[in-house]
Every structure is written in C-alpha cells, then in structure tokens.
Image (tube, rainbow, N blue to C red; front, side, top):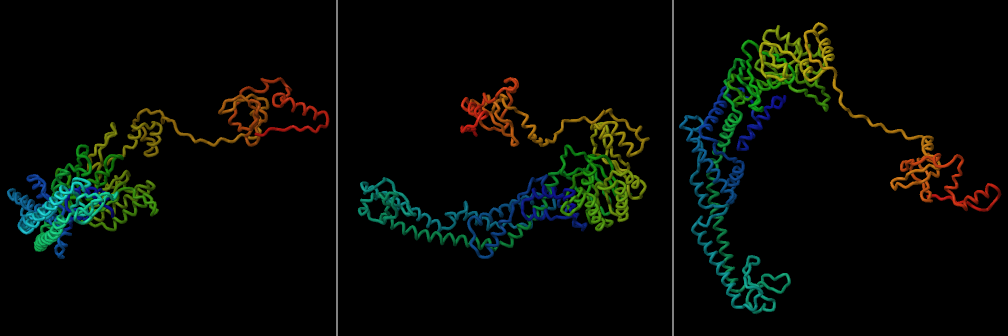
Length: 633
C-alpha cells in the first residue's frame, strides 16, 4: 500500500533528507521504516533527542560527504598512485574528522551520550600533516623533499640562462633580427631572425612565421641549456612520483581507520539529521507505549504553516478503539486523520513529533484509504478503487494495526454505500485495531453511537462565517452543514427547501431559516456559432437586377450590372466602359435600376456601342453577314 504517499510522509522524508550531508544518510532516510522492536525504537528516539540538545548547545556539527573518498581509498588499496588532488581530499576529510571529534568532546561537559562517539574517530595526525606539508594547491610543494627543492631551483636557473643567451644573441645580431624580443616556440626559447639572415645565426630552426619572412631559431647556446632542462624535468618527475607513492602508501596503511571514520561520520550524519528535522519543524520527543493508547496535545501537520495551522487535540485507546469523524466538507476531517497517523509514524521511525506533547503506541502496520484512487488504465471507478483498497486493508489488519479511512462508503448509491460503510466499521471493530474514519452518513453516526468501542467525533464549523474551526470534539456527532453552506453561497431559498424536503421530509423545512435569495443570477454565456446556410440560386439571382448601379470593392468604383448572379455566385459588371465578371460578395447596391431608368428602357444603349446596336437592329429586320463579338474578362 502507498501509505507514506497518502499521508505525505514521503514529503517529510524529502525535508529530512535535505538536512543530511552524506549520500549514505540520504539513502538510509529514503528507505527508513517504522521500528517494531521497542528497544531499537527507544534508542533511536534517544539519539534524536541527544542530537537536538547538542546542536542547541554547540551549533551544527562539522560533517562532510565522504562518497568521493571511498573511491580514492579503493585506488590506494589497489596500488594506484594518488594524484595531489586526491591526496588533498583525504587531508580535508581528516581535518573534518578532527573538528568533529573536538565538537563531540565539547559535548561531554553537558553529559550528552553522543559526545562519547569521539572515541571512535581516528584523526590520523601524521598522515594529515604529511599531506599538508608536501601537497599545496593540488601540486607537490617545492619543499616536499630536499632533492625536489634543489632540482626545481636548478630548473629555474637553467631557464634564466636560456633567456639570457637568447637576449645576448639578439643584442649581437640586431641587423638580422625581425624583432627585439625572444619568444617561445614548442617549449623552446627562440629568436626571430629575418629569412635572408638564416645562416648568420648558428642554431636550429624551430618554426617560421605565417608569411615565411621570419624564422624562429634556437641559438646553440640556448640549446645546450634546453637539453640540461629536459634532464632536470625527468629528475623532477621521478622525485614527484616518489613523494606521491610514499603518501599513497601512508593512505593505504590508514584505509581501515579511514573507513571507520567514514562509517562513524555517516552514522552521526543520520543521527544529527533527525535532530535537525526536530529543530526545523519545532518538534518534541514523544512517549512510547504498548497499551494501544494515542494522546496528542496541540498536534500539527508538519507540512502546514505553524502560523496558520490550528492545533489538534486528540485521544484514542483508553476505552474505545475507533472514532467516526463527521462534519462539513473543508472542515478539516482529512487533515485531522492525516495529522494523527503522520505523527504516529514519525514517532515510530525514531523522529520527534509536531505536538506540544504526545503519548503514542507502537503499531505493526499503518493502513489507509484516502483519495478517490480512480484509475482509468485499470478500469477502476472511485467506488471500485475504494473497495479494492478497503479489502487490501482488511487482509493485512490485526489488533496492533492503525487504520485511517476517508469518506467511508462514498462513490456509490447512498443507501448501499451506508450499508457497506457499517459493514466495514464492524470488521474494523472485530479486528481490535485502532482506526479513524470520516463519513457523512447519519446512519453511520447512529451506528457509532450505539456500538461499544466506537465513538463519534465532529469537526467544529461556524455556520455564520462558513469558516471551519479545525477543532475535533470527541464524543459528539457532527452535521454536514451543506444547506447552510449552499445558502451562504447564494442558492435560492426555493431550491434549498426542495433539498431539505427531499432529505428529511416536509416537517423539517420549517426548522431551517434561509436568506431570501430570489433565483440563480444568470450570467452572459457563450453561444454556438452555426454555419450560415448558403443562398439559393433564386435568392442570388434576385439580389441584383440588370441596370442596377453598384459599388465594386475594394476599389469602391461605381459600375452597372450587366448580368445577374449565376449559380456560382458570379455576376457581370460594367465599370468605365469595361465589362468583367466578379463575385457578388464584392459588390454592394448603390441605386436600383428602376430609380435610374424609365420602364421598358432599352439597356443596350448603356452596354453596347452604336455599331453593335446598328448590326443588332439589322439582324432583327433581315439577313446579314455581320457578326457581334462579346467581351469576356
């Protein structure tokens, strides 16, 4: 079951892990679980308390992640030569070990049991001092050995003599030089010589300029010192390796002690991380009992803001094993049951709890059903997911378990859901486990009121302000306050009366007083845009008549309709003596033809030329071989 995620203990772990330093401690925190052995649990709680007190007195302990050092120690054991960088990392860990031992030793003045862990830390003073003396800034220091110092001093003198020889050559052959400064090419000191003077300077050509006009020559005198320098570099390298191998051997001899130091550092990091969490969340040490008793005073959810969170008073296990919590939505029921289980689990994991005081029993299992659990990929509805979780809970439960269930019996028909809720409660009661459940069913409240070992509780709620008080009152059943909330939020009185009558009958309506909301206020809503039906051919053809004066867009020119709109929505217009076809949507009526021309007016006068009209007139009277041509654009 995903209990840790449902009660958000995984988020507490994230905060906790963020307070640890070593990777080992972070990994241990990620995998931590509640203890089932009383002696182990009490020891873990003592460690948490001791670490918190020591930090309150001495501040945060000096700790360091040692993951990298483990790799370095493995290399030393295999006989690899450690680099100056790796040796310095070993030295830094030894410095932290020494500081940690001093920190713990100072805790002895307060009789803190954790202070005696200092006896398990070996600071390896000789190794640390040798590394500090011979390695600096990730390099072997000049004074690491007498031979190394002399070699490096001789190398410095040799390099200086090379430069002096180069400068002397430049002074003696100024006319042959392309520049007045020597330079270094391929690690060799060279002088810039003009190409035509190549044979005037005895030496080796090392390089040339991009144009080829300048040759970089290493003079013979310089070459002698360069060869000497190369031999010195070989000697230096051998001496450096000698020193590094010596230090590596010292590290290899100290591997066992170093591993023990790291083990103690990781152990102390885990212990102090618990104390840091207690300080971070302002926690207290809980009392532990085996009598199935849970008593929390001013309990808080550790992930909620302290300034906003309302402390919870809770008690269970004295005479009853189960509590049925009722009350309005947003009243804090779910937060309440999460707070109780989360504090119990934190205590059983050896952590302090976010309470003023706490007396908590050990549990063999923490089981819960919170959230709708709906899963489309597994074809699970809200109700199906609830039932699946409940059956899993019932299969693991025993008298030493702690169970919480939210919205018992929800997600289905109310009558059937109520019956299932009571059946689940009966199974929980028979198991003898401690349990907390939330519900809205009045029948479940009645069942809890009449059943031994189960008690009702309610979350307080201000009906006037619609604000939850987040206080649990054990021994009283609560009401959902749904009608009051709906009334306050503006539901009309008539709707509320219908709701009351449907829920409790006509007589109950008179017991409620509602505000006079007339009706639900309607707001502007979106509308569906329908596709406009296209005009029929008859509608289009009648839109414009021959002779109508129209405006043609986008040019906004005035024209006259020659041919009405056809089935494709195209019409013919004459503009400035030219006729062309155009879509009717680009044309707007200006003046109708009947307003421009008298009845039976011959429109050919407007559209045809004199020659065309004459030919047409002849065609109407007799046979003629003349032809009339129509424009098409």
